[in-house]
Amino acid sequence: MFGWIRLGVMGLIALTVVYACVSWYSKSVRREKLEVEFDAGGFDGTRADFVAKGLKEYDGSLRRKLILGVYVVPIIVVGSVIYLTNF
Image (tube, rainbow, N blue to C red; front, side):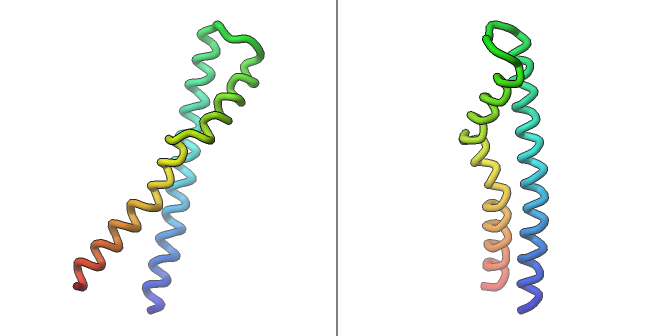
């Protein structure tokens, strides 16, 4: 029983690290795209304000929510493999 709990805790820790890395990478890529878009011209205001507004919109986007699949997909796969192996 303790083995299952230890597996679950270690798995969630690993998935949290992966989620943090993917989230950070995705946000940095979006920031870079916003900076390039601003540098292309045609926008009023400062670069920092433009990037901040774009990142605020990104925080509510579907792409940001899809990153949560880092938790869902592995849990479903591991659970399915365990179930199919034992039953």
